[in-house]
Length: 154
Image (cartoon, rainbow, N blue to C red):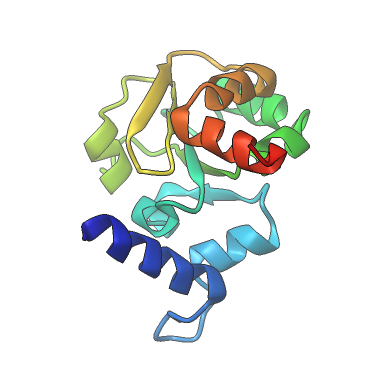
C-alpha cells in the first residue's frame, strides 16, 4: 500500500496537482524547466524528488573549493547523459549549517553522493568523478535497468 501511495503522490507532483502554498514554483517544477539547474541543499527537500529523479549531491567545505568547481565542470561536459538519467544536482558548501542532507549523509570534506529514485544512497565518492562514470553507475541500478528495458519495449 505505501508504494501505491508514493506512486500516486509522484503522479500529482509530476502534473503539478500539488502546488506550493505561496504560488512559487516547486523545486521539481524548477528542475523540470531546467534539468541542469544546480540547487543548493537549503532550497530543496530531496523527498520531493523521490521516484522522479536521482539526486546527485556534492558536498564541499566552501563554494570556492576547486574540487567543487571541477565536479561541476565534469558534469557540464555531458549534460544529455545526466538529463536522460533524470539526475537532479544538489550542492552543499556550508559545513557550519547542518542541512538535512549533510546531517543524513555525514560527509567529510569533499564528497559526491549518488542517490536512487527511492532516496537511498547508491554510491559515495571522495573526489570529483566524470559524468560518464556517473552515468555508467546509474545504468547498473535495478530501476534504471527497468527504465532501459521499458524504452526498448522489453
